[in-house]
Length: 111
Image 1 (tube, rainbow, N blue to C red):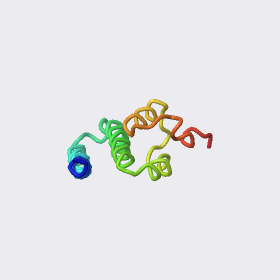
Image 2: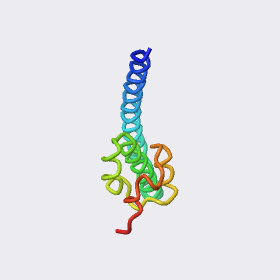
Image 3: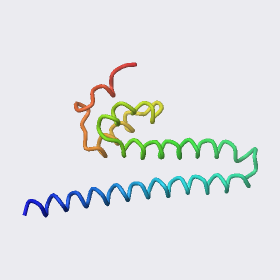
């Protein structure tokens, strides 16, 4: 029946939200554990590695935050969460959101 389908979709949406929230918590814990490991690394040799690693981790964290936003917030906050995204970054995020470039032309407007 129609109610069963609607209830199933609602339940799946709830589970997806909970799973995403847990993924975000796990990611933050992983980032903190990584920071603790790097404290023991030789400062001279480990600094550039740590800097590039934390930059990648921050990008991944911001990507997750962006993907969890509703459509309007996704568009409004895109440049806030992603500093200088590459065309590949943009295409990947649009694909994950189920959007096309024509759906969000404001992301491609020149600043």
